[in-house]
Image 1 (cartoon, one colour):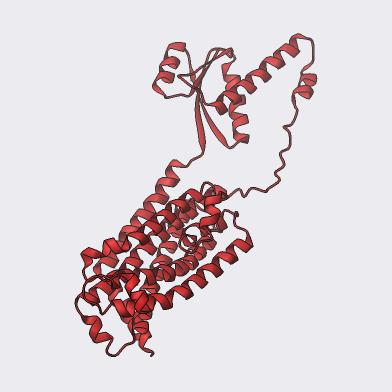
Image 2: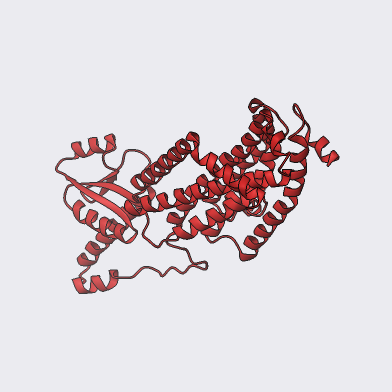
Length: 386
């Protein structure tokens, strides 16, 4: 095997055996399963509790429930014999509204506009029918007048009915990507500092070239991160299907593939920078300060990626999905939600690959000179010497 392959295998095996890796993997899976389960519990659609009191209220409530089903809204109806217990139920928040004798509506405070609209429409139709009966029209004539279908709705841009579901999957993907990029980037930096502080790197560089050592470290840790991300995707899909959150196929596999692909692009872009951050210091305590710019970039990209799940067509999300430092956390969401143009995806990939290709040689030269320097060094000095 080539030298860098040996280094890569060593990094992979040593990191995989580390107890911290097992603990972090377990914590990540627990958090992920918790997010999916909680999301499934609380995302059960729109539901209202409606109460009735007196004659004529139950008929209106039945019409409201029937109309609500057409809108994928659940309306549960409860009947009260007297007004006093119904008022107490409204005041306690047990019901959202009470129809009193089919003539008035009782609510606690500001009523829900959708529920009020459903009740008003059903009540108006009932009163209209009664007025037409008093005017002498037959039941068949009244049914012919009132049985008018709704206006057809045509969308200029077709809406994917699975958009909410895919948005949830995209959110989980962004969360997993954020954790992976930050954690494994830190591993690269911490590994470099460890070798430098223990002076092991001086022994290694006597037989291994700096480029081979850095390349092996990045590939070994990156491959481990890719496998862990794949495990996370498999567990997320399995749990989602088990609790009925996803109906297979639902696009989740495509999301998982996108996350894995953009992790590779993002990791190679950031790993070289993390290696430089570790090479210019000699103590783990100093690593946080040199990693701060990278941490800010990843955290900012993470929040933009989260915001993109709600508004993927915004100017900020579009720009961030193209720039190399933020595209791994933003572009997958825009692709999943159907807001990314093909040229944007291609341009983002080309820009990420080109930026990484330009960055790695520079980072390797800085790493080769800084890793052997005692104490903390400045990147500007290493670039000038390079």
